[in-house]
Image 1 (cartoon, rainbow, N blue to C red):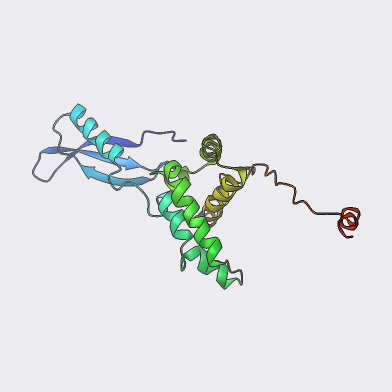
Image 2 (image 1 turned 90 degrees about the horizontal axis):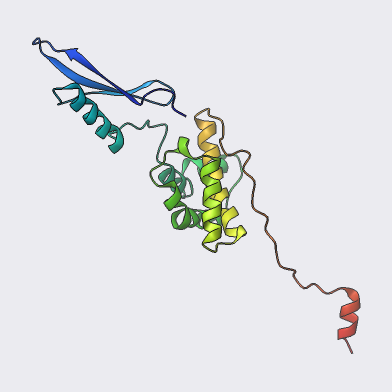
Length: 193
């Protein structure tokens, strides 16, 4: 949660002796993301201009904090850093599993991930995703597979960026599998003449 304002406006003197309004944008950890010169001439106009830049995004995203949907879909694409890393360790994944996970995220996860960054994916978001998909009629197996398809690339990204995984305690839904109808020896003996 952000403890400071996402941006600050200030007046700065130029070489020709005039003053211009500037805005400085901050990351959640307080570090500076970007500083821009504003075209506004008054403080209220400068504030409105900085606010519109902030709301529009304006290139204020760190490269190490990519769009979550794009990152997760790319992670489930052949040749991705995640899959290459696994294969270097001798842990290969079938093409069917990779394709299935990518399609799950594309079909069901895009709506929830939207324009969020990887750092914005957390347990409350995924809990909400589970509830909404359940209300739409998706079964626990599909929901658990989607959560796993998000969890794995998120964990990989967290390790690569030295962050704690925000969904480490997220529990899977119970999957009530149907009885398979296996016959015991008594029933088999009744079938044979």
